[in-house]
Length: 374
Image (cartoon, rainbow, N blue to C red; front, side, top):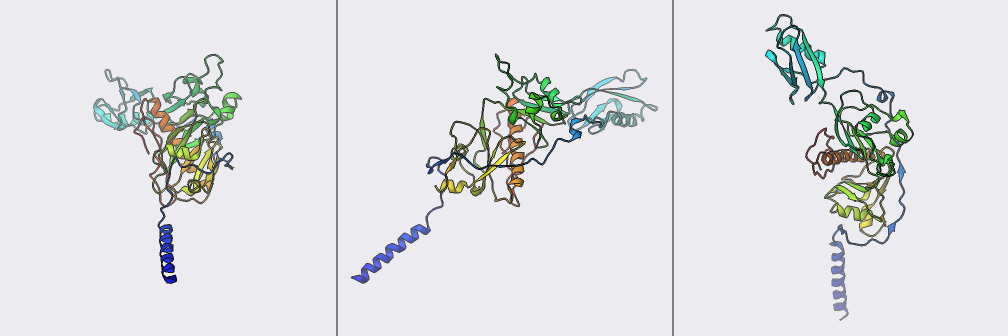
């Protein structure tokens, strides 16, 4: 009898052990309650590595280079009937008179004049070609957010940041008080250039008149002045639906990721990054979301304008990885806001290379409406 009891006990023990060994990995459940919510999270301040240089505060002295869309008036001197208005085609070519197609993109006005004169020398004796740049359309910048007339603007001449805001009608202000602080969040306003956030302090520039922040714009710059009234959390990285999550009081990390339909495959949940504050001077916290999912750590309460990034791979230093996060956030803002102003409904999101194994490469901001990116 004793032997039978021992056999039964051993069998039950083996079943229990087998059940433990085959227990499934914890999965994401948006409705599963965590033990508690952490009211404060430790953030590390990151010093930006880019500074405003004296060159950014001076107009460019380089000769203007022609591009697609630029409108020109061309005439062969002293030959009647040769005056014509034309524009540079999307392929960079200009078509005039007997010269046929001549590559104009990238040339100066004088360079194009010389190229056309060479082509026309077969039909005219020593022709002198006069070219007038009538309108610049190939160089532009985006003015987005809380200005009266957001949109795409031509960069016809050297233009400062203050001048660009004025050309867009100025900051959108409250109807009765006239206060610009109520509707434009200067602390989170940014200038994006080539996917990077420039260290422009809009508070110093607009409130204090600090001209050391008044940079000259370049082709394809994005200026974004977000609303101080509407707030959201930007959810990026390895999540099923990257998006801007509307902020509500008490929003937690778990709830935010739930709005994005949970982590995507290959998400590395042990080093979820939360970026807080201005993209110019960000603070970063690293959270073990796997521990939160399994009830081993408290959930994290988010704040308006936070950025939540779920990586694909572990990373070495917070600083190197943060640069990728900020770059991607800047690109997502530029594409989302630009598409919204252009009347397109694109839920833009961004994936960025991380380490040797990478996600989809991050797209560069485009100067005109494009299809949404991941």
